[in-house]
Amino acid sequence: MSRVSKSLKNAKVGVFFFTISIFLQFFSRKIFLDGLGDEFLGLESTLRSILGFLNLAELGIGTAIGFTLYKPLYDSNQKEINKVIALLGVLYKKIGLAILAVGVIISLFFPMIFEGEGFSLMLIYFVFYTLLVSTLLAYFVNYHSSLFGADQKGYIIQKYFQSFTILRVLLQVVVVIYYKNFYLYIILELIFSIGYSIVLRQKIKSVYPWLIITYKEKTSLIKEYPEIIIKVKQVFFHKISQFIKSGTDNLLIYGLINLQSVTLFGNYFLVFSKLNSLIMMAFAGTGSAVGNLIAEDNKENIKKVFWELVTIQFFIAGFFSLTIYYTLDYLIMLWLGEEYILTQLILILFIANFFLTQIVATINRFKNAYGLYADVWAAMTEAIINLIVSFIFGKIYGIAGIVIGTVSSMFVIGVIWKPYYLFKHGFKKSVMAYWVGLLPILLIFTASTLIINYSITNFIEVDGKISILEWVLYATKVSLVVVLIYGTLLYCFIPSFRVFSFRVKQLVLKMINLNK
Image 1 (cartoon, helix red, strand yellow):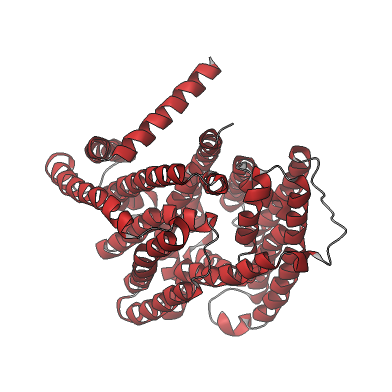
Image 2 (cartoon, rainbow, N blue to C red):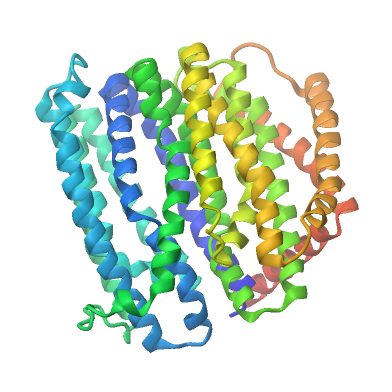
């Protein structure tokens, strides 16, 4: 099976399950808000952010191991794969114990952190330790699943993960509707995490029967792979930066504003995080495919694939950004109520962050595949910019100021620095080639935005409250306008977009013919 075919299979399975999961989580969010309250969901989000901070101890081991697996997988070197996965197990178990220890220490301060929030300490500890144990399962039980991702079989992980998530949320909805019990709601998280870990472990045994689950010669592994340890140390700083960009927002909002604002922010964050995840599913397997491509070392093919991915990622970023701008406020009003709609400035900032995340995604994909993590100063600079700007502007402008911090750091490092670093150390070319190639795409996006805004404002804009059916019809019209204008202009003027479109068309036709 070719790299593109594998990527398409990952995308097909991932998007199918994830789409179901998204609709279910949007449906359940309203029920959870009504049944459990803003404050409890804010508490849960804050505790998850603390766990996100603890997960920094992972140090980027999974990323470094994934990079190391590309070559032995390409060469079908089973002995080397076994040793690398065994090393992953050794490192993950050490980190898992560290996370457990630090988690216990941090929890000792909960009486001070959550003083006066209206929840019993017993409930706070129960939620935290249930989520902590669920997190630790990835370190102690199912770390072998990293092999699926590196081998372009991420669809297997998604199939099981999303199935378990869907069933868990359905049962949580039942618990909230009929019992409104915080403890039952949270314990389901642990039960399904255990079930998922057991099933996934059995699956990896069946897919890779030659994989040694319990590797005996562990003591010399760390010394045998010094390059992995170097990569781990480098990725650590990038992990810190990633956490500060997304994981500290809830903590800052709680510290600077209140728990209820964490929930208001969380509603919008849910929309954009799920959308980002959906797009990641659509591109599932492309990271390992790029790693395989680079291992093959065909310069011309690398360049061609890079520009195809840049163009399609830009199309996706523009399509969803424009569609969300015109439709999200109406969706929030129908979904949760008019009181949950945030200001237009906050919406634009969320969209800006989403857009930048998407257009940088291809750069990150190739940067990771080349193992380019040595720019630790850039990661730390991004984190510092984010924290300082978020704190200063957050005190002045609230939620909007905190999102400004994320957007500004993403622009400086993600948009400006990372392309330079990739082209200099990965492609061994001048970054001007990137900006010259990107300029026509930027111009087309700008022209499309102006034309789309004129068309929607003058021909299909709606006023006041609308029903669900009217929103669906409106959103469909907006989506069609964006696709027809933006997609057509890209197809006419950007050769790489035409090539990618033709490639996908051929693969889809091939799959249809095979299924007949």
